[in-house]
Image 1 (cartoon, rainbow over the protein chains, first blue to last red):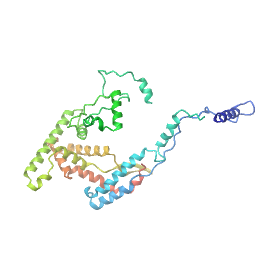
Image 2: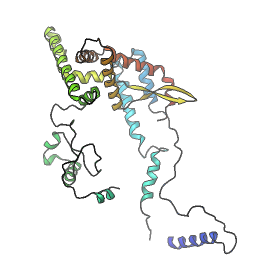
Image 3: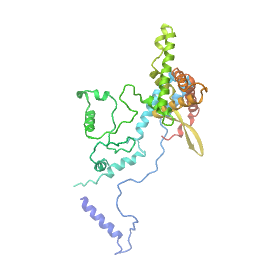
Image 4: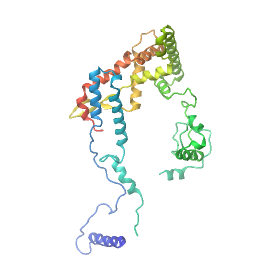
Length: 116
Length: 229
């Protein structure tokens, strides 16, 4: 069924391109072939990560005159947050990332699956 | 991708001229210098480790660099510090300075230990490696500043630093401090041992520099939202 639909589409396209009947409707400057990669998109700027942990740590520093031993809890939570943010940076869970292009590429670069 | 590379790879024969810093084919695996990995008995290996071992028996392995050894004295942090101290590729001199530093620290600490009263003896740390590591930990900054442009002006924005960057900054500050702020007649190892002992007890110029960075970051905390990562 996909093949029948495919040939019908090919005929329609060739009719639109031909000069036999009327003026051609389509005048493509590039060959009408699907590429196997997604075009570049403008990377949306994200937000600053771990700002709350950072501000808590800085408030603690201000209170304790920048002595590190008294602020160890806040510092630990800040480090954990930073680690999580680094892990999230290139994971598929974070949307709108430069890595989302990579996610689209992997199935596109595979050969097409023929459904019977 | 790996399929094409293995296709190009000729059957591996050991050669005389396999130089470490030449570009290895990605097919080559990294060497494992740690002894503990090889002492695990067959029964206690996880399936991933078993797979890795089988892979290693088939694939070629890169030559190990001079700096990695399987000896108990191999310390990656100390090796990095020696490399940073090295000038013009003279590792012998740099390593010599570090060994003299460690010996000097040990001597000072042992002297303090013998002079201390009985109650305080247990608190004095005599292991120079432990002192070195703790001093470096005390010198590592928690957040750094990055110069970010917004609306035509540059702002110093507080950013979280990676572990490598923090370690690098601590070592760099230590070395520059010892090179610049010493008396003409003091030797490097003497000054370095003084600074390391001061950093171990959270005093001294390097720790002060770390605190100044923290203070700058704290005063610029309003600009933290200029980050986008």
